[in-house]
Image 1: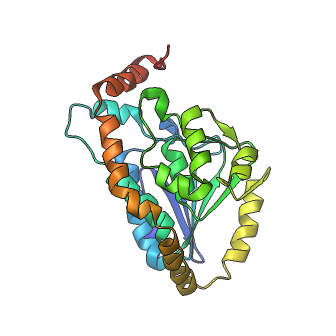
Image 2: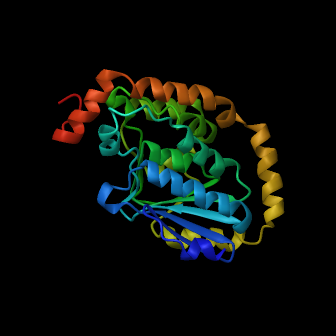
Length: 256
């Protein structure tokens, strides 16, 4: 659809060609973090992709795929009415269940909510320099909304380990654990090879297949209410909010 190629977005760069939609998270000045506007724009683009695209490729910047929640925005909104994480969860659900093949093309760092975008996609391709991490527990938080997608992709034990250790893991380890499906030094060439093959698929066939597969493993759908409740609980804890405030204003981590 021409609307995707002609519309200007604040947080995304979008290109649709030959039923392949490239969605690049583009907030370089904010370390490619997630804010409310990004979620709104992602939702709008994916709704169009339901009919216009056979393949959706989610990308970031060369050094950072997506670094998770925008703590600056959270800090500015702490006095306002509590926001629900449901819109972001629904974006991930649409990547997981939509009538298209979703691909995460990861270069650089994927952290916290960035791992949510990764885990929600059907296929994950990454560069050898890519790293993956869940840093939430360092701030007394938890990746509540990420975990249903992550557990489905890599299993309970590894998702639990990644959450508790909070340390970045390499692309090689992510591949071994099932978080990534393929990894090469030149991930652009890796993506090209996958697109050549996937483009042969029929969109109606993809939609039927994904509908069936998500019945076999419907964890993200079933866990939605609990995930949202857990997310709201940790972000409404005053001690956690203060840790975020201090980090935003001083750059100090909670243990410093």
